[in-house]
Image (cartoon, rainbow, N blue to C red):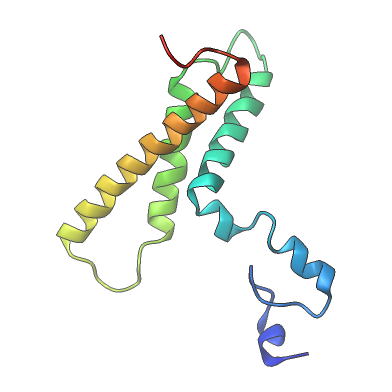
Length: 123
């Protein structure tokens, strides 16, 4: 066992068992932090909640995936905040990027849902 393997099993650290290395590449915290990972998470949450019908309350409104996109992207923005001091300009820039990424994930989830349902995407 190498020194790197003794330190812990991070997302991409090599394990002594080859099959364990395959699982580390499938869906990890590192892949969740990607565009496709965030879109998959939001879509999965929304589709799962749409399947639950409790007391007439349904998750079919388009505001739900927008809310889920905002929650995921804001959480990711806070989680990736550096330890060193950042200026107000950098914080504003990060906030604008978070808004843009929220809309990007939202529109991707809505578009993917429309395609899966067979809804025409053009008027």
